[in-house]
Length: 335
Image (cartoon, rainbow, N blue to C red; front, side):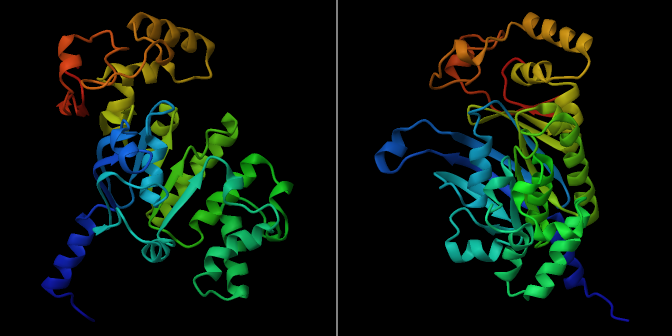
């Protein structure tokens, strides 16, 4: 029997303590050269971490920058400032060769499963492709594809069928299988269930939760519906126009939101019970939060101030820093 030395024990403890992903002061601007330098930031100073086996939900309205963050992590969008570290390794500006090495550990599930499934290939060929690129034999890749299909609730014989022969929910299950077939450590789910009906959403969310618990996966789960994020995530980060408005444990952020924008998101989240939906609508209207369409972006200060019922001159003059309020970190002068 071997006994771990203190050095090995310290190394193992350090690996466990190290975040799976750490995003620090991330800034993304679209465009190149002077155009990019003059453009407003699509992502402006965002920071968060994801621990091993943890799911962090990234939630916000359309245009909040959440998908841009996902693309930056995956290397699909250039970073203007800040850093992204994966298991202690800086991947902010990783080149193509470095990204290929990360391909099996860092995977994605997108809103449209057709983006990862070639309609001309069988499901088995699509699932086997990332394995074949890593030197797995055709026979072994096919067997792994069949096993993975069974794990996501589809029959083994589905390997010989084409994506068009499946429903939208089944295609999304296939996309999940393709993302997980290389046994990754971190999966970026970008609006992975938003195009599905409610019953299929629940099935895919349960599947993602089961696979996370079985395999110790970490997820960055991106969505616009805070109730969907609440189901899967242990921690939630709320974005508005590229900035973090509130972050903290999922229960604290979703059940007792402190930022006016988070409160509006929770009130706007759809529920299946008409009476509760009507009550939420009345609460939202009573809050006095203006709609996004009624205001335009203004530089400086708090980006939410033009919609916020609490806004004062201070909000226009000074961008609020994140501060701890009731268990959450909130970027609001008056929360």
